[in-house]
Picture 1 (cartoon, rainbow, N blue to C red):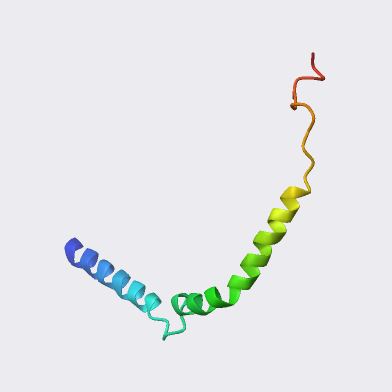
Picture 2 (spheres, rainbow, N blue to C red):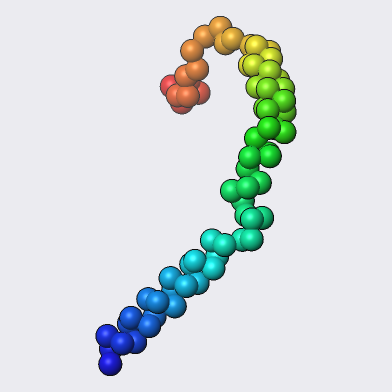
Amino acid sequence: MRILIGALAIALMTVAAHAQDMAGGRGKRHQQDTQKTEDKAKTKADEQAYKEALKRIPVPNEKPDPWKSVR
């Protein structure tokens, strides 16, 4: 009897998992293709802004010493 209940539970879980995968063609997998083409320009602009921000960070003159105030 336990084997029958276990087999039934496993069968129900696989059916539920299969139903989650079938999104009717509107799933995330199909949306990613259109998002990739639309976001290329935004990604390029973000990278350029990041590089410009890195250039504006000042270079420290001395090495940081976290124990300086303790000594």
